[in-house]
Length: 266
Image 1 (cartoon, one colour):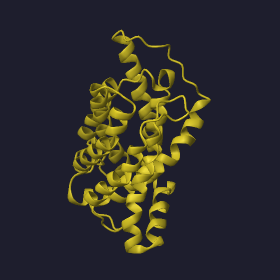
Image 2: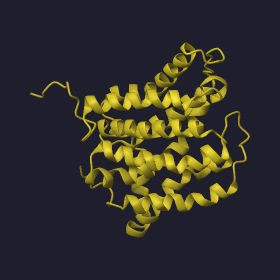
Image 3: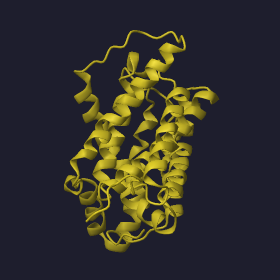
């Protein structure tokens, strides 16, 4: 699959640049932010994908390249088929709700399910800018070159693995989660990136659709009981991987956009 909307960059150089730009944030340490959710100061490294994409674009097209990337990222009009707003906004909450009931069914000690609906718009606004910065780089800049050379599924697995590795220091060393927790979160991250590619390719390659889904990922995780304190990525990662597998089976690994049971056009 090819795209001429932006120049074909090097995904490898882009990934390496993200890690290099993230070093200062990792060195800051894991001091928690003054929020009821477990986030370290280094969470501000969400700017790195956007910066990593902007540097080569600026070298090639000066400010015009960066402007085009941002315009592409925020272009909501590319989502022509409005039915895709359903998975964009509701798939991740359903995954988290299913995770909760699986944990309750298996006897996990959980608080009663209580969704602070008034906090939803606040979380959505708070996580929107990080989602824009990340997806402008991941999907806006790197997805085209990656899918030009390989299937959407392989691109999703590779990018998801890099995405997970990028978060490893924060997960394990700064927020002090166990290796089991970290492995489950890594699995969930890879599966979610496959789902993002699925949404992206079925919405006319809308980066804005990826932004909204990314936003809902964070909103849903921190709406879990007690602001995510009972969140178990082993359970959620397994469910998300199953969803990614179903998506791949039904829409095909090559593009993740050719529904197996679609009616043939006239």
